[in-house]
Image (cartoon, rainbow, N blue to C red; front, side, top):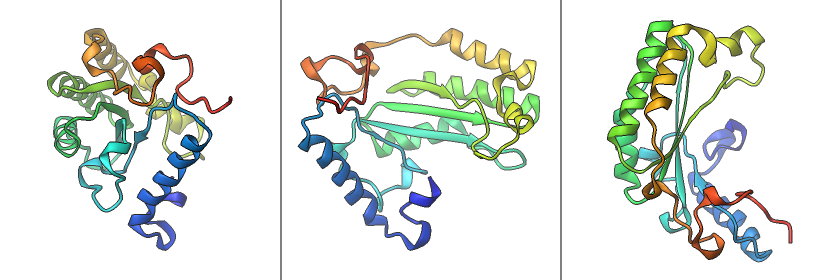
Length: 192
């Protein structure tokens, strides 16, 4: 993503919103209506220079990637800040972590608690591998939920407490017959 970032290689922040509008225009021009638009900035709470108009965003993706030997984000604070910035948008929360087993397990438990405390979370996704596309198998394993028993237990406990809710379905303005995205076989279908 860094290559196409609005700040990489001398990019201009306003380019992100223009690119977003351009891509949506292509979809609209070919009649593609079965599309949910997910805005996934690096820092959703502070993306004002980059963001497209809120009316063009269906869902906001918050990525919490916790690298070893770094300060890890506090899940409840990150979700709450994103809710303030996008109060009427469903959230997808993507998480991944590599670190000491107890630290990782405790953080995953905090993620689960934060998801429960903050309304509007449509989905919780665990990224099962290193964010580095050149990572070795051993490095990828350190990011896995199966990297240690404590992390796996913590995530199983989180998943065991999740309950589906109709109130967290993303808005259906782009979908036929106002059906929630979950009822469609393909979120992205541009073929006639």
